[in-house]
Length: 278
Image 1: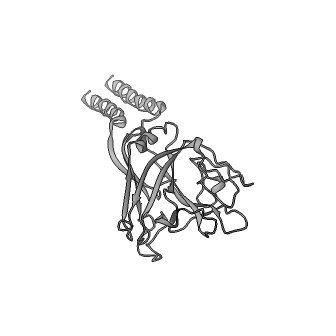
Image 2: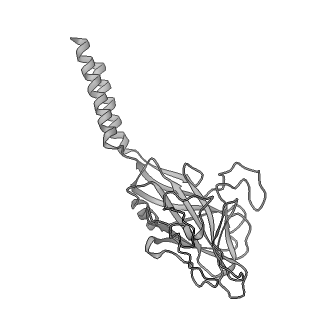
Image 3: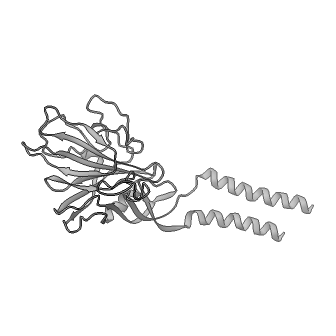
């Protein structure tokens, strides 16, 4: 009888602990279904607009629409796989990025959240079929990235955000002194946690980073593919310099079927014990 009581109590404790465990966690784009990529909208010196992506060891955030310039407008897209967390309980959230190079100029950045399950516009004749949970960093383009809207122009005066499906979460100005090789930058704000809480049906979270000031230069950050910094590769394992989210949240609550299975197991243990005693 004592053994049975202990087993049933253990199952009950497991049921309670599953929904009660809360801790601070950090998850990078190198974890699970995470992804990071640079999207390019337009190069004003070209005869035709640019619609491209770059999936390498660095990502640029840049805004340059000068009529005589040769630089692109670049936006960074990040996806974090937060499977296993109950995001409705998220708090104390922040985004961290590693500088890929030394940079003597000030760079402003803005962080946007993409509405869960928002679809890519697919407005350049290429049907990606992507949404915020499933875009591919190897095949996505600016025109197919959820949260962006490519406008087929050579001279661009904005970043072509899909304003109906993006929300400004945080911003920061990084000084030249702060943008040293390998420097870690953390952007925080209550809006980031609120955005995580909106993910009630998916744990795949997409963020966009765009420049907050006009410049032909760029804020350049490490990726999950980075094995070094500033062109020096092979120094560290890939993922070392990946962007990451830090937050506090409880463990994911199991589906009702899981609770039923655990309760059924407890009942089976109890019934088996009774048969043995009889």
